[in-house]
Amino acid sequence: MVALLIGMVGVVVVMRLFASAEGDKRTTTGGNDAQAAGGLALYELQREIAQSGHGIGNFLILGCGLSYTTSRDTAAVTLDVLAPVVVNPRTALVPAGDSGTDTLLLVTGASAGPSEGDATIAASVAGRYDVSTAGMFGVGNRVVAATATRPSPCALTLDTVSAISGSTLTVSPGTAGLPSGSSVFDLGVAPRVQAYAVRQGSLTVCDYLAWDCGSSNYIGNPDVWVPLAGNIVGLRAQYGRDTSGVAGSAMSGVVDTWDQTTPGGAADTSGLPLECRWARVVALRLAVVARSPAYDKGTVTSAAPTWDGSTANTSLSAAWTTLTPVALPIDLSANADWMHYRHRVLQATVPLRNLIWQGSQLTYQGGSGGC
Image (cartoon, rainbow, N blue to C red):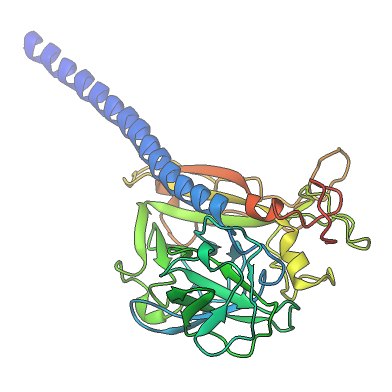
């Protein structure tokens, strides 16, 4: 009886130690899994945002609308603006993701040529542009043509070069009636227009040159909205805008405020030309929220995590203190059981270098664009 009693006590102790060890293991592995998933998602977004805007920073085309036909479903698409990154574009363009998350639309060219474009030497006709340096283009490259004086509103067409002969680019569809001295901008053979959204707990991406990502028929289709990282429950993003020297058209090149005010939108009251409003977006701040894959019976998260944009900050007490006029907290309430998962927040600030290098400001990098 004594031996049996000692054995039972030993079994109880061992089982309690096992349960404790298993709980510690679940805590460690759950947090590590969330960290890995969040790191993967953030790396993908950082890499694409850092490259965004390549080839589209010239003031003749920056912020213009862009029309084209997608390659896979042959849909007619018109983007509102040709810009490096748009936070929460219209839901007709990028359907909303999971509740409490933001969506992104990124555009970047892939040309090795100059971003200033190439001047036309004759008025354009349908399917043909005559340019001064045809050798800088290649068959299969995507190009955009714009007049030397930016129209308002500005609407562009994405063309494809099908042949090159002498100074002539044969393009499809092409824009007729552009006067001599217009510019043709080379976006390379493989530019990217990509939409990002958190859908059903995964970070997903849609190739907007291949598919009409705005179509509600594609929501939930993994062949169109391709999952990049699982167990992602939050995505928040803010523009880093240079709001200094607006009256004197003199940018400083330094972020003054973080917000979701899309240039040219109803909340943008700067009064500047649209291209200058976009030129003043010099960075993007974002946060990715990942969760552990395993449900925990206990409450392991008592409050929603935070990031730099969670709290409004309007203090100007310290030098280099930037403003966050509106709080943008992380919202996990779409999942009623969110408190039973472990979460990790990863955030980054990404300079939009392809706009900064454009030199569109007076007091930064010797620019003279007057924005």
